[in-house]
Image 1 (cartoon, rainbow, N blue to C red):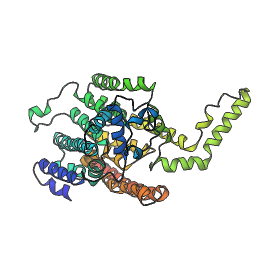
Image 2 (cartoon, rainbow, N blue to C red):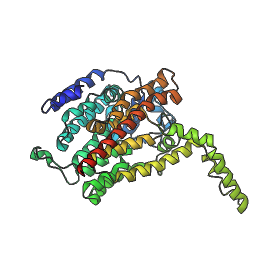
Image 3 (cartoon, helix red, strand yellow):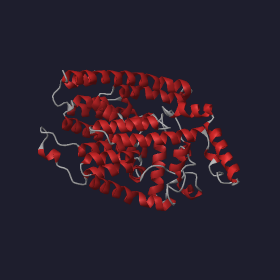
Length: 419
């Protein structure tokens, strides 16, 4: 309702930003009761600030005993080294040096979130989209809670992604001349910043490069800056950071496709069937050790992740067909989230800016429904099947109805043009 009323206000950007600021100030004092990720952020930042390697040393490592205090024992997943990229880690390190690190970190994350709101307003003007739609993100309770309240690092990456799309969007006629000025390496630098805050935006590089008009230059800048920052991490860990491997293999929570898929694969007996075929091959070739390294990975959860990994590749390929950069970026992140094995409420921040601009009802609905996943930890509601059904069922129904309506409307308009 607020967004509709703002549509009647000329240039409501200042009002939207003021409302966004006030909402976030209200939740800044809130302790991180729904998620303890902020404790992990500050621990990793403390380790980095001490000149040690949080990518190679998990919180429980003996080398870090001198850094431990009463807060350390509450750090989540102490057996896993950090999974956060260098830009995020640098921000954690800055906050960890202050007397009130949790508040300082939340202020940094909130500033990034407000920056995303400002960039989104600028993008709306550049695209000719009503500015009032930005309120669907700026005043949405989910970003306010997850960033100002819980202090999630995703705010840094989301702001950078909006920066990429803004930098690649042509300047409108109504825009001030200086507003359209941009450095030739700007989009690539924004893209590198997004990846160095959280890795998932690297999957948007093909889309952004194609839509940039100068894909070689975009990829050269984005990949070069990313490589320069990630090379020390690879050298320090001997390859892919072990924490990232553990996250990819082991983590699972509320995946919209993953939760039913691995259970279907288990019921169908796919893993035993594959094992049987491999054993038959060993018997035929008399090479009884040929497939031994594969057997430990034949279980339905990992097979489901591999299948969804193929879905991710298809999603990236489909993104190359997008004509609208902002909508295409939103669809890409939305489809990636549907393929994910782990979907926490704050993951939705990657889709909400585009859902706001495009008016995607199902995703805006999901921003409220996704909070039900907290009941799995706080209220004892099992995420499968009841939590999963309550969250993803209404989302799927509304999405299907909206898609069907849009399809019928599109056919009607096409038929009208040919009359």
